[in-house]
Amino acid sequence: MRDVLLIALYALLGAAGAGALGALALRALRRRSVAVSLAVVAAVPVAAMLAGTLAVARAMFLSAHDLTVVTTVCAVAAVVSLGTALLLGRWVVARSAALTRAARSFGEGGTFAAPGGGATAELAELGRALADTSAKLARSRERERALESSRRELVAWISHDLRTPLAGLRAMSEALEDGVAEDPARYVRQIRAETERLTAMVGDLFELSRIHAGALPLRPSRMSVDDLVDGALAGAGPLAREHGVRLVGDGVAAVPVEVDGGEMARVLGNLLVNAVRRTPADGTVAVAARREADTVVVSVTDGCGGIPEDDLPRVFDTGWRGSAARTPAEPGGGGAGLGLAIVRGIVEAHAGRASVRNVPGGCRFEVTLPVAPSP
Image 1 (cartoon, one colour):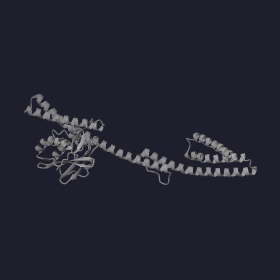
Image 2: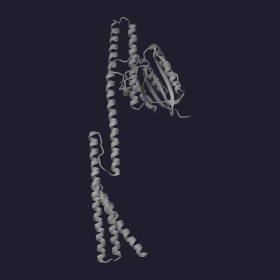
Image 3: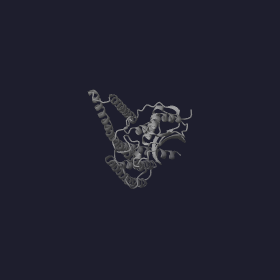
Image 4: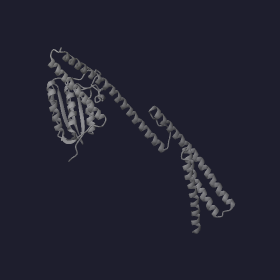
């Protein structure tokens, strides 16, 4: 029993010494190639086995011939193991180099394609992660280009919308100042109307800037969807009567939601005003609300005749008006293609979503909001 313990002790000391030397070698070579690290890792167990075997062999007082045989066998095993490790290391290094080149092209060209051929599980997972990152960056760049195009379009439209009324205001003010206005009271009314429209436009721009900056202040409270719809219908009633459009609010479910009442009133008001202005006289604008699982869907259906399919993805973009014509917004409307962008921003700030689709005779805007939790 004592001999066995001594053999185990000698083997332990030899293996521990080899392991310590291997750890020092790995630390010293940590900045070198993966192949070198693999060679060191392969050499550690071989050296541990060799050291333990030689220590035990010497302790057992083997003959010189037997000690030479044991040493030769261990040395051959060590050489073969190191050679195999170096060959495998070169294969791993080649895969790493291919992945490095692909990643470098990802940084230079903006796209990443994982190199073909077999790879270790870790390298394959890294390649998939880089491919996913490349796809996300491509989508982000596409959104950025769309936003930049939308901003340029908005600046062009806003410049046009400001230039026209400002020129009119200047002409009317000069006519009043020179005393050549035939009907000063009418000029004053027009100046007030244009001023109110410009004020509304500036207010929309300020609201949109807060939405884009994520700084829209919300004061949510629990309320029923039918109350929101009733208030919006009452607010849009005068405009609907002026345009000869019927407002219908049937089928509105009393679903509780937790929203900022003022902001959601603006959402429904924008949708209703937009629908009334694009529905011909004697047409109908219908509002409905239904519950779907844990959400409530509020819809506004108009009789505009529908939106071209190519324009549907752009309906909620900033500055979109449904045509490329840069005509001024309606008097009193205050619009510059901002209303629907504000709608989407407010709805998304409430963890909801806004969408639009064509229906027979018109289009339907839908606002989906989460249902308020039970008290």
